[in-house]
Image 1 (cartoon, rainbow, N blue to C red):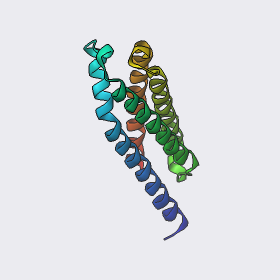
Image 2: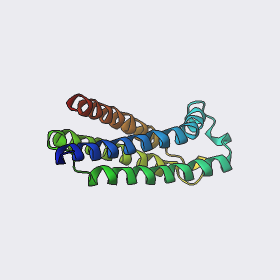
Image 3: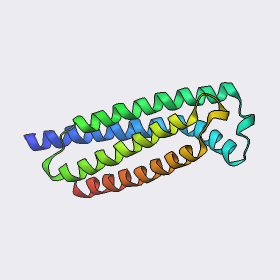
Length: 145
C-alpha cells in the first residue's frame, strides 16, 4: 500500500470510529431526551421525577463530554488532500453540534423547575441544524471517495 492509500485507510478508520461513536451516544441519550421532551411538550415538567431529571442531566453532561472527545479526534485527523475542504466543513458542523449539546445541557439547570425552555428549544434546533450539515459533509466525502 502506498502512502496515499495508507492515509485514506487511516482517515476512513477515524471517520468510522467518530461517526459510530456519535451514533452510539445518540442512541444512549435519545430515550432520556424523548422522555424530557414529552414532559415539556405536555406541560408536565413540574411532575417530572427529580431522580430521573438528575440522571438525565448527568447523562447529557457525560454525552456532551464524549461528543467533545469525538470532535477532538476529527480535529486531529489529517484527511487526504481531496477531502481537506469538506473535512474542515465537517469539523465546523460537528463543533456546532457539540455547542448545541453544551447549550442543551446548560439549559437543564439543577431541577425540572430550573429548566430554561427557550434555551432548550434553541439548543435542540441548533443540534438538528448541525446534524443536517454533518450529514451533508459526510455525503460529500462519500461521493469523493
